[in-house]
Each structure stands twice: as C-alpha cells, then as structure tokens.
Length: 364
Image 1 (cartoon, one colour):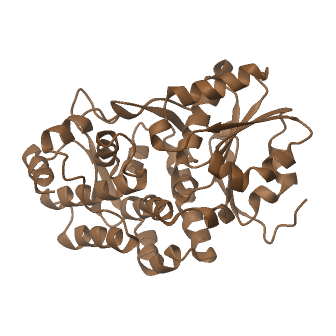
Image 2 (image 1 turned 135 degrees about the vertical axis):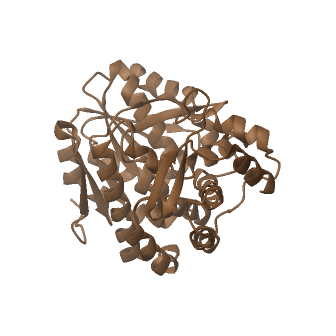
Image 3 (image 1 turned 90 degrees about the vertical axis):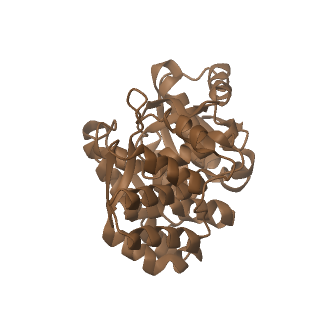
C-alpha cells in the first residue's frame, strides 16, 4: 500500500442502509487497502475516457489486478453522453460475462459518472457502482446524490435513474491535470452552493477565490468538503427531488437550455450554469426578490472566476423559453425556476412575470 500523507476528510450521505462515504483528500486512489475493502466484487469494470485513463487508471487497475477487471473507454465530451455510450458499457459487461455481483467504477468527470451510474442502474436491473471523480465539477456535485442519466438531442438529462453509489473517492491530486477552463467551469457549482444555500460559504468563497483559482490545496479541500456536506444534507432530506433538492438546480433551467441549444458541444456545463445563475439573479432582482447588490455580486463572482455572465447572443427569447419548458422541473409546460431570495437563500417558483422573463432574455 502507498502511504497516505493524511487521512482523507470523510463526508457521509445518510440514507439509512444505503448510506455511503465521500472520502476527500490527496492520494486517495493510491490507497489500495481502502479501495479493496470498499470494492469487494470479484468482477470490476472501470469506465473512463482515453485522456483520464492515461493519467489515473493505473492505481485502480493495480488494486484489482487479482480480480476479473476490464477497462471501458468512452469518447470524451458532453455530446457523447447518450444511449450509445451506455450500450458500449453494457456490451462490454455482457461480452465479459459480468454478473449481478459486479461493480462498475466511474473514473472521470460528470459525463463518465452519469453514464456509468445509469449503466449500473440498468444492467441486470441494478448493480453496484463507485464514483472516482477527476474534475472539480464532478467532485463537488455530479458524483454525489445518485442522479444518473444521459442526454437526448432535445433535452438535457432526459433519460436516467436515481441510483446511489457505494462510495465516492475524491482524490484532489487528479485536479493537477485538469485544464484551466474545466477547473473554472467546476467553480460554478461551488459558487452555486454558497449563492443558493449557504451565506457563510458564499462569504468564504468571495474571500478565498484567488486561492481556489490557484488550486491551493487547503482552500480546495475546504471548498470540496463543504460543497459535499451541503449536498449530502440536501440529498439525505430529499433524495428524489420532491422539494428541497430542487434548490440545487439554481441556474440550471437557464443553463440546460443553453447546453441543448448549442448541441452540448461549445459550452461546458459549468459555463452554462454560470450564465444561468446570472440570469436567475437578474430575474430575481426584477421580481423584487433580491436587491441590486446581490445581483451585481453574482455577476462579479462569475467574472472574477473567468466564467460567462451572458447566454449565447443567437438564442432568441422564444427558443430559449421553449427549451426551458422541457426542463424536468416544469409542470404541464409551466416553467419552474430556482431564484435567489438573498445571500445563501433561494426558492423554486413559477410565480414570476412572463413579461420580465422575455425582456430579460431579449436584453441579454
């Protein structure tokens, strides 16, 4: 076993007998004993893409070298988050005679995690899977909470299932190979937790943003652990998004429309969410839910982080609104939005002026 410099920080998602740990730290995936004591299956399928696998698959392959292990590589990018990718995983599982006792390990960002989780939920009506997120966005958000799925050409995450992982291993060392644009996109989800759910965390992000962008280890550990604690608490209270969990979608209804419009190719998820949070803040200001100071603070945080504050200029109001109407929070075509109501506070509502919405998008 490779020595760990420190014991990882552990956050637990409390779901009774389906509870699971999130271990956060440096060198987590080098800890062979930890991996093997968690993943006891004799059949292990590791799902990744070529770039991530080249950097990070060796410790996992080594940890399970005495078991039946297979590495499945998916094409990279949100545009490949579709049923064809799920079929590739299932084909490898069947070809290698993997049974119901197997474990799938998702090694990669949110795309790999979502696809692998959905394949695990579907294969033989459900098998175990583990998340090993290698992007900031996946570490603070998509790897936690059991939302799995793929996109449809006409809507983001329209095909999926709730399927909780057995464990999440967050190795902060994997961020060293993450491109700067991807890192900044992940920061959008960190900011979301502060803006929509925790004012003290919002203040901390404001004060430590430069350290985070410099990838300071202590700052990153605090940001990732705090984000995971916030999400774990929300998921434990509302696993299937009947109420409170919808607040985690601040900026996402706008953002998913941007991603769908651009074919999941030219905008990263976090970039679309950043612009979506700015639009949500502007609408909230128009509706009298927040003051101009919080709207400006939202925009300034995105600008300081190097994230967009405006949607694509070729996305007209009619198209934008039609795309948002396909959002999973919509009810009978009525668009329900998560809007900020104060620092660290937000609400899910359809009680807003359609005129304000159209004018907001037209102005953008």
